[in-house]
Length: 117
Image (cartoon, rainbow, N blue to C red; front, side, top):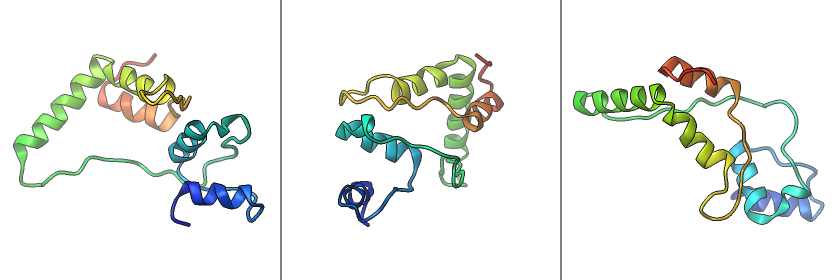
């Protein structure tokens, strides 16, 4: 398979019963193709992959900017607004992912200083 679209094509053709992939990719595909009414993401996570930001170790000025920016975004609650904008509300393309923030991400944001809801 090259991508999620290929995997869904295989399911549609009867060559597979399900697709396993990143939750955001699956929901994005379902939303963009209008297939959300016919398919859903179900079951427990098969794995959990944390995300990060990488930059050169020898760039303390950039490191300070990144840390200060995330501190500000968390304490001002802007992190929550950004998440709502891109994962819960309608995107510029017109699709809506409808992906509530999971407990792991909520906790990670709280550790950055985001006040609880």
